[in-house]
Length: 436
Image (tube, rainbow, N blue to C red; front, side, top):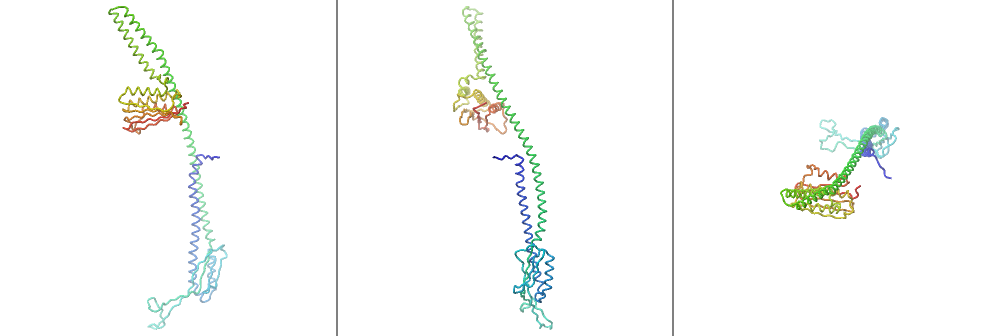
């Protein structure tokens, strides 16, 4: 089962993952630093305490007055809860004084040791003035001070008291960090809610725009279909009625000319003949114009030969009537089963593309290709010329391009333009074969 998360949930997750990582890192570092601080402080105090006791207990150890030393050590142990035990041993490592704390819960596995040294002073009783002489550093005689280790002071520290103090500080920091995290989560939730609402609004707007765009495409497709049907109807009326009337008028004018030939000679008869010939020529011209209009409205070749034949006939006409621009045509596929709506739309698109070439391109060579691919179910149209081209970034689309684009989009196809100034233009179009 695939889990689907809303945009709000994803936003909260994206926002809170780094926050949680930073929060966890801060908590771990804070706890580690507090413990490290306790260890460093205990080590420093243990070394200082051992050294100070070793320097002040020399007389008591030498003289054997251990009771005063015990009282002093006991006072230190009772006043400082971070001291677990203090031991004084003699030169033979035998314990002489041991005082342990009653309040410390645990002890460090190590102790801090400092030696108790007895100092010997050289005294020269034979000075020049008869007074006792104490040797100094400037004398050339043997050293005046020598030391002898008579014992050691060993201090064992207890971290429990200091850890409790650091734990209270850590809990305060943790509470402040948790409060900041809660505020961050609340802000993230509020932001995610707003983002989710805005996203829903954008999705609804997009869906409405897509629906409106789809409705517009359907409307354009319907309008184009109606226009083509109306063009076909007008073409049929012109072909069946107007052209038939023109043929009848021409036949009548020819009958008048035939009757005038039988009537003999005279100025009036000659004028009748001239008028009859003029009417015949006029009807022929009108008939030719009607035929051209019919081809523009609804090319008969499209109904007779299909898209391939109609496009080929159109390109042959352009090639013969515009000698400065040579036209080439290439096709692939079977166009016999192509739908009527797709065929007429493709024909109009090619017609508009070639019209734009003739109006704006000033090209000397134009290539048109139709490829009907059953593999992807598309009709691919490409119109390429070697004309002037245009700058796609600055040039605005003309009515012809807009019409082509709307025809393509109405059929659910795609259209693209590739052009640069002086490098010609390539129009690529793909239309689905299953146009609904």
